[in-house]
Amino acid sequence: MTTLLKAIVAAVAGLAIGLWATRAMLANGGPFNSVTIGAWSVATKGGATDADPYTRASLARSGEVPLALGEGLQLVARVDDAGRPLNPRCVYRVGPRAPTARYWTLGVVDSKGFPIENPAGRYVLRSSEILRKAGGEFSIYVSATAHSGNWLPVGAPGAFALVLRLYDSPLGATIGGIDKAAAPEIAREGCA
Amino acid sequence: MNPRAALAEAAFYSAGALILGALAHFALVLSIPLVATHDAYNRLAEIGPKDSTLAVPRAGPHEGLLAYADPAVANALCFFDLRKGPIRVRAPLGRAAFASLSFHSQRGAVFYALTDRAATHGMMEALIATPKQLRAIIAQDDEDNPSEDLRIASPTLQGFVLARIFSELPSLYAEAEAQAKSLSCAPEPPAK
Image 1 (cartoon, each protein chain N blue to C red):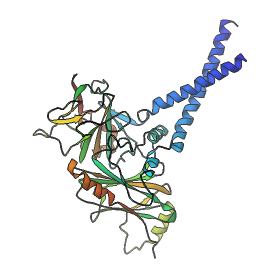
Image 2 (image 1 turned 120 degrees about the horizontal axis):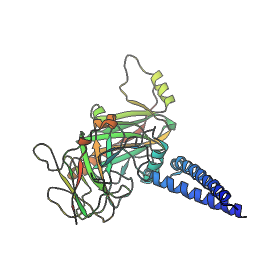
Image 3 (image 1 turned 45 degrees about the vertical axis):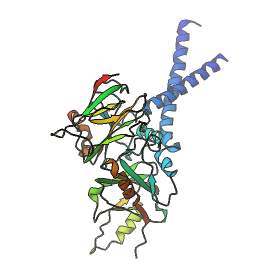
Image 4 (image 1 turned 180 degrees about the horizontal axis):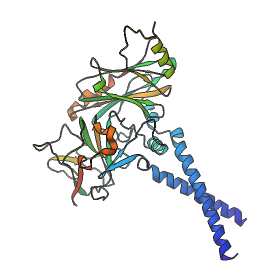
């Protein structure tokens, strides 16, 4: 009897460990799928047919149609340059440059990858609509309250992520060799 | 029971739990894509009938259809079924500054993608076929009149084509949406 009981406890614990490990490993796109550039991570194999099982399982759960390598590249940041999780009570300055691409957009999403409601109704800023300095450098301010210049609002008090989508970027082919200096910095300017 | 025997027993059950956990983990990761009911393919299939071009609702806080979709990009898709023959995909180019097509198998994996750089005569065009249909088409090719078709072999009989049309400015989104909807996937009439 005690042997059976011990076996059952061990089996339940084992299954719980398996479930927990699966959940944890699939949470951010799978462990074998990303290259990090500064605060950004890039899903290198997105929806490719040779994606690993973790990537495929993660995509099946998130319900995402990733950009194909020929179309562009998506970079996601959940932390700032110092490695601190993005906090909706802080102001972040993103810039001054972005990797080479025909166009890019910078958006704010929640932990599941969906835009967050905000009074300004602005969920994304395009490379073609922002204000720039003479040399093409830019600063985008990500904050909950309105900011002068290029302002990208953060709607809800919860955790958020920044998504940089590069369209028609030559980076796709040389993903391992992205220069850290090419990716925008995410600098925390202060917190309320 | 002496302490050493108790320790050995605990180690035995812990090892069993870990092995079971690992097995459960691998089984889960491999089976999730097969049983997922909320992956991109199924989410898109809910938009409308599979025999027409469907506009994907714009990404927004109340529109949780596809995760990580870009609110600056208008998407439309059509499902294809190669059982009755090859499918010709056409996407006319409008004024949009960036446009692309990605070809997905039923599991959502991308098997081909092209951008407006590959367009000819103001049109992104491709012929999707199974490898067998493709061989038949090639066998009928006229050597003096080489075909200009871009031919793509699909790994699965069914799948979908997604058009992404970038809006350069917020005010151009409606136009991008109209351009996205002009995507068409029509059965290719059999060659004479």
